Amino acid sequence: MQWAAVVLGFSIPVSVALDNVLLAVILLHWLLGGGYREKLAAIRANPVALLALALFGLYLVGTLYTIGSESDVLNTLSKATRLLLVPALVLPMREHVWRVRAVTAFLAAMLVSMLVSYLFWLGVIPVNVWLKGTALDPVAFKAHITHNLFMAYTAFLFALAAVCARTRRGRWLLFALAAGAAVNVLVMVPGRTGHIVVLVLFTYFLYRELRVKGFAIAGLALAALAAVVALSPDSMLHKRFTLADDEYQQWRAGVPPDQSSSVGQRLELLRNTVDVIRDNPVLGVGTGGFAAAYAALASRSGDPATKNPHNEFLMIVSQLGLAGLALLLCLFGAQWWFAARLPDRMSEGAARGLVLTIVVASALTSTLVDHAEGLFFAYMSGVLYAGYGARRREAASGHAERGAPTLGRTSGPSPAGH
Image 1 (tube, rainbow, N blue to C red):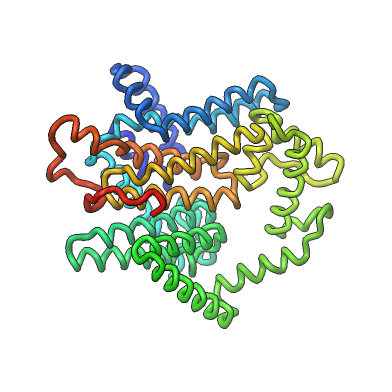
Image 2 (cartoon, rainbow, N blue to C red):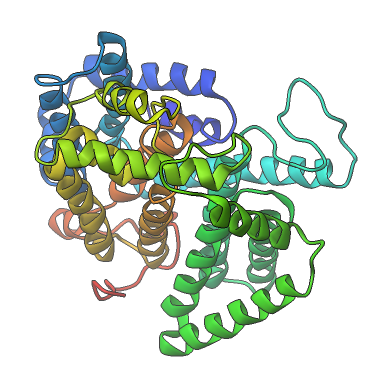
């Protein structure tokens, strides 16, 4: 099962079909592999796994009062089952070596994606049916929103690893890879969600390493970037944000936007979704009920129907009410808090970077609805938080894993607000 989980880390940025095969293998092994007492004990001792289970349980409760069609209910519930990957990985990924292999597999896939992206951008690879990229949209295996989201987190992981590197050569190589991934996000691939995520992660990284001085450096760097973008009208960033501003200025509430207006469509989706929530504020419309509720509203306003409001927070409130939002925020909060109790400093940073990545992305996309993003969140949560309580287990067993590979240099727990 451990190797299936490791390969899944490589598969998530690459292949949906392979994802599904590996998920089936992991599920069957968990159900048929025995050792249930140990598995359940590991889950009970892990607060992140318990909250993921609780959120999935709320989706089950939502099926009891949903207004959605059978197909929409089953589709939404199948996506929510990705949350079960968090408790499923707690025991298999408990050892340092397996967590390292899992994260390394993900980074290996992202290195391949970055290489392919650069080759598309340089015109070395022609457009073909096997890859999604073009010279103007140089992605590899995923659409640009997903590509940039994963690449932003990849840049952050490489930066964390560089700080933890034991040799100067290794440190500079890892910083170079981090810079290459950040350039891929900011200069080459037009995914605005990733642009925002990489800037948030960059700011957090500097604060994490330098505290208040890091915030000051980040502010200066962002101001310099803004100036460069403003003075470079032909740059991709300038064009993307100018377009976003134009689309925002043209949007009028209640007037269906032009189909080419990405910002206008999202704003109209958000406005209508707020209306759905206003009509069902406490319990929501039930699991899978969003499409039916939105369609009923859209039929009165003349807007096109949709199944995705492109905002995970509004999506969960519309379906599961305020209890759903509270539980989702509790999950994110617990992940941030308990990251301080992970076994090494890089694990703590990677876990908190994951929270920032998903929280920012959730304000702009429906992360738990989208296959790759939802699976990425559940997988990384399961892998990283499988290390929760490692020091306590080592102390109880009377020995530490001396010489065992870790995600970074071992250090004492950082402050919860670090």
